[in-house]
Each structure stands twice: as structure tokens, then as C-alpha cells.
Amino acid sequence: MKFDSLDFYREHASRYSNLSHEFTHSLYTDSSLTGLTGDMDLLKRIVKLAPGRRGLDAGCGAGARDVHLLNAWGYQAYGVDAVEENVSLAKSLHPEIADLIQVVDLREPLPFDDASFDFVTCNAVIQHMAPQTTEQTTLPELARVLAPDGVLQLMFKVGSGVVTVGDKAYGSQSVARTFQLYSEYRLLEVLKELGCTLVEASGKEELGGLMYFNDIKPMRHCVFWVRKSDSWSGSTRPTTTGAGRAKR
Ligand SMILES: C[S@@+](CC[C@H](N)C(=O)[O-])C[C@H]1O[C@@H](n2cnc3c(N)ncnc32)[C@H](O)[C@@H]1O
Image (cartoon, rainbow, N blue to C red; front, side, top):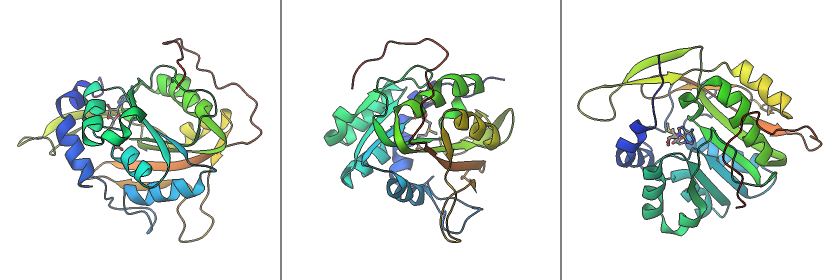
């Protein structure tokens, strides 16, 4: 079984952007924490956890809502996405961040220097990648571009194997979509090897640790933050080859 291709996003860029900007799909149900009600709770918290103001939204989606919001809040946030249509839509919707968004495939090395960002978000993206690519290229690259003490937010569909569900948000008929599921424990293991460890909640009301929720489909998601050690000296270079690295 093959998971969703990028063609889905090419075809539905405009619809995705509308849903995202209306926050239609950004509210969660069956959350494991009372303070976790939607995307905004995570965004507001990660900027507090981060040691500085430079951010990257990896797989920022059509319209790059969060890149736009972060910059409006005074952060210096960049966005990348593999789909040209998603990036062009973001540039036309939010011209003020046009220079901060670019087409980049997260299955390849990233065009940013080591330690470029204080925080990185990667929400609902690895569901479109083979676990081997995620483990050997994408996560090492996200860890590489994080500054020491920087925080990575990883959100994914939780489980094992590949699953197909009907999505009713893209037309009068339900569209069959296929996603790669991930084990939260395996991802944490890989990230630990890259010098990144789980950010635990420090109080009862605080977000942190392994957090779970359902989206509108509904599908079960896990999201967590990991912090990169400030004394990490290992290599996070990907083990696959890809496009040459350009400077930002
Ligand atoms: C479900 S959307 C999530 C968008 C955004 N992160 C959000 O939470 O709203 C998945 C996004 O991942 C992007 N994507 C999928 N595979 C990618 C890849 N290999 N490299 C970069 N972006 C990718 C898609 O183009 C799409 O915009």
C-alpha cells in the first residue's frame, strides 16, 4: 500500500489553506491533556520553550499559516514545503513573508546551516514518508539545523503500518487517503541518538511529555517536544545523499 502522494496537496492547496486559516481542522478532540485543545496551544508553548526567536516550520502547508503568525508575533520564522503550489499560495496570501518560504523536500538535506534555528515544528508531515527516510534523513536534518538547547515539535499519526481512511473535507464525496503511522517510542529512540530528549511537563496543567489527540477524520495523533542537548557533539548528517546544501 502506498501513502498519499504530494499530488493530493497540489490538487487541494487552496482548500487546505482555507481550512487551515479558518482553524477548521486545528481543534482537537479526546486530548490526553486538558490544556491541549488545538494547534495554537502548541505554537504558543513552543515559542516559550525555545531559547531564541528563530524558527522553522518544516512542511508548513498551503498558505503557511504558522509562519505568517509567528512572524506577526515578532519571531523570525521560515517555512519549507515540498509542494510548489503550497508555497506560491503562501507568498500571495502573505507577501510580507514571501522571502522566508521556499520549496524544499524533507526527504533531502536541508538548505540551512547547522544550528540555524531555536525551534522547529514538523506537524503532520512524516505521515507522507517512509519510516526509513524519516529516520535516516528527515530527523537527522531537523536535529542538525536546531541550535543547542533548541526545541523540535514533532506531530504524527500514531500506530504501526500504513492505514487508509476516508476524508470528507475535500469535496462532496469522501476521498480515500493513506498515511504512514509511527511509534512514538521508536521516534524518541531515534531522536535520542541525535542528542534530543523529551521535554516533560513540569506541572499538572502544563503541556509536555507524550501528548495525544484526535483530529477531525478522526485519527489518533501524538505530538511531543524534544530538546537538543547543549553539549551534543555527535553527527546528525543524513546517511542518504541528496541535493547540495545552499546557504540561506
Ligand atoms: C497535513 S499537511 C500539514 C501542513 C502543516 N504542517 C500543518 O500542520 O497544517 C502535510 C504537508 O506536508 C507536506 N509534505 C509532504 N511530504 C513532504 C516532503 N517530503 N517534504 C516537504 N513537505 C512535505 C505537504 O506538501 C503538506 O503541505
